[in-house]
Each structure stands twice: as structure tokens, then as C-alpha cells.
Image 1 (tube, rainbow, N blue to C red):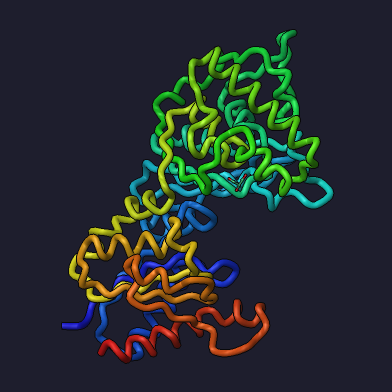
Image 2: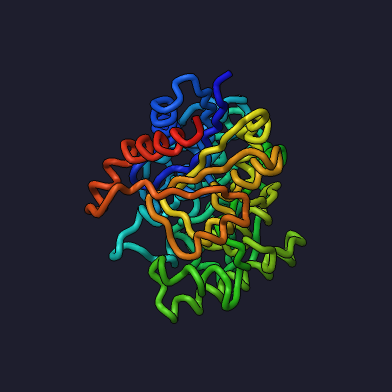
Length: 378
Ligand SMILES: O=C(O)[C@H](O)CO
């Protein structure tokens, strides 16, 4: 009987989607072992590429939707519906990401997560009840108020006027009006995959740590931080929810906090969500070898990146499964991963070349490296 290989790489950013990496791995393996059985499970860790990988892994569909971008102008975003037909998967950056602003236009006083809320609303209108929401890579610092506004919450000043969108105005927040919240919202469960565990405010908070990359000067950081503190005080007083110190509340400019306050949400590590929704462990039964990988692998891989999740899953299913990782770039202290379930780690780069050429040749390099490895496994 042919050897059984499970192929579960993350994408190699700017070079290949996770699905393309699976295909290139299979080409290489079959050159060495023609009767090898290859199971493809494209992976992700909750960040960029999660929608594509989960759609590919579950045979879901991609939905395109025009929404309000971070600067208030329309952007064309996309999200996924998984193969089960009832789970939506959204990357907040698709609607509210930092790639929509430039050096000239970035301004966390006015950027908004409204478009992320519109994507959630679109899911609801299609009868979706469960949403996986990857948060991070945002242009925003609005505490998720824009997202909530798209779902019917109103943020009012002391004269009863609605505040303009953006984190710069939250210092004037006096009342949160819930009378127009979309009723179905309470039936939606959101599984939040956050890229960081920072709290909402303070030295480790959203404004201080991530505000500068979104265009905040030191003075703006101070104002934004005070505004988020004031906002969390009002939420606590009026809605009885204390979100300030929840790990991840400060992710995506405080969208983490907004999700806790205004929706039924659970935060979980992105890779755990992906492992669950792709049924990775079930697919690992009776597997001989597990190939994984990512554009870059180093000691940080063990802090929740996809190849780490895959190695842990494989060893928990059967410690005899050999876990083999491929990467374009192998970085610092990679040998520490040998204690984390990785059996071998291979670089795919054949020799010195410009980065553009290497990115363009990703599939060839993955296939060749996979073939070489598979020749040892015949
Ligand atoms: O979007 C951001 O603020 C960072 O990615 C942290 O979540």
C-alpha cells in the first residue's frame, strides 16, 4: 500500500496560497513515490489567508461585497462561507485593513471599523449564525465602535448627537443607544481569532503599541488612549461589561473590546480555530508523514503559527507521524522547534537570487524540495 502524506502548510506570503503549496508538495512527492496518497489541508493561523485557506479546505465559497473602508470611502472586500453553508469567515483587514491607507492618509482619529460591521451584517442577512472573525492588521483605533454602529448601536454625545466615526471622537461619548440594534445579532456567535493579546488601554494597549504604525503622533496616542479608557468606562457603566483588561481587547485598535461589548464572542487562538474547522486531526488518522511549512520559520513559529499547530496536532494524534516543515526563510533559533514536534525543517531556496525571483519560483522550489525529501522516505 502507498505511503500516506498529509499536506498542511500555511500560505507562503506573496508567493503561494496554502492550497498552491499543497499542490506543489504533491507534485514533488509523487515524482519520488508515484503511488503516494496525499491529503491536502490548506492551513492558516487566523491572520491573512485564513479566509482562502478555510474555503479551500472546506470547499466553501467566496463572497465579494462593497463596504465602507477605513477612511469612509467604499472598498471591495471579500469574505467566505464555509462548506457547511452556515459558517462565515471574515478577515477584518479585508474591510478595515491598514493596506487601505497611505502614509498621507493614515489617521487613527478618523479611521473606522464600520465596514467590518457591514460584513457581519451581510453574513446575518444570508442566514449565517456562526462567524469566524480574524482580527489584526487594522488601520483603525476606534474600539470597534464603527463595527457596532453598522449593527445598529448609536454612540451619542451629551447633546444626543451621534458621534462621527473614528477613535478621535470617543472622548465625547456620553450614551450608548441600543434601541436600533439589529435583533438577529443576539443569535450570532462570533469566534474571534486575534493576532495579539494586548489589553485595550495603557502602555501595552492598542493606542500605545499599534497607534504609531497607523499614523498616530505621541500626542495623538495620548488622546486615543484616554478616549478608549473613557469609552470602556461608559461601556462598563451602561452595559455592565468590563472589557478593558481582557487579553486581546486591544487587538485591531480595540475591535477586540468592541466585539466583547457588543456581540456574543469568544476569543480563541487562530490556529486552534483553523484546526477545528478543517477537521485536521480526523484527517491525520493513519497518516505516515505530515508536511507543513510557511514563508518563514523561526523560534516565533511556536507562538501559535500554523506549522506549530500542525506539528502539535500530528503528535497528539500519533507520535509516530513524522512532521516535516518547508520554508522560504529559516530564521533564528529554529532548532528549538525540534522540541515542539518538528522532526525536520528544510529551506526551499536553491541559491542566492533576488526576492522577486524567489517569490515567483515558489512552486518549483517547493516541488523540488518535497521530491528530495520523499526520495528518502521511499
Ligand atoms: O491591527 C492591529 O492593531 C494590530 O495588528 C494588532 O491587532
